[in-house]
Length: 116
Image (cartoon, rainbow, N blue to C red; front, side):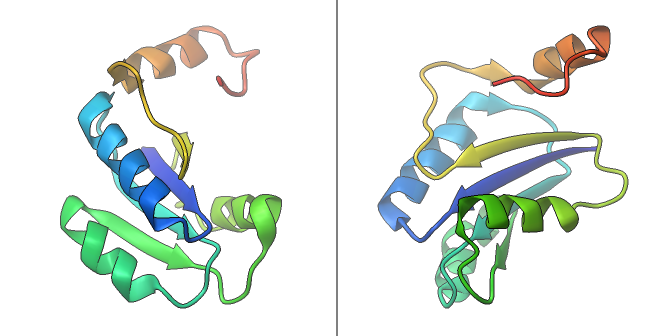
């Protein structure tokens, strides 16, 4: 299973650009699309803005910081999640990315744990 995680700390303008860029340029069969929010209290705004695109919203109940938020998000992944494509809210893409091509590289090179 392929999962898309988008990390934010509440920078709504950055998040809007990152998701728009991902929707336009990421080609992949994502079983899960999830926004991980380190800014407690704006779940409803995020759900209204991105729920129609298939994004779940998970917000921390208190600020955990960058590393804490990533650790927490990883702990909540489904057991059958094989691949994760992680974005931060200030990432945008300059070209289309075929995620299956990246997965193939990882499968053909078991010594690799991630690509950046």
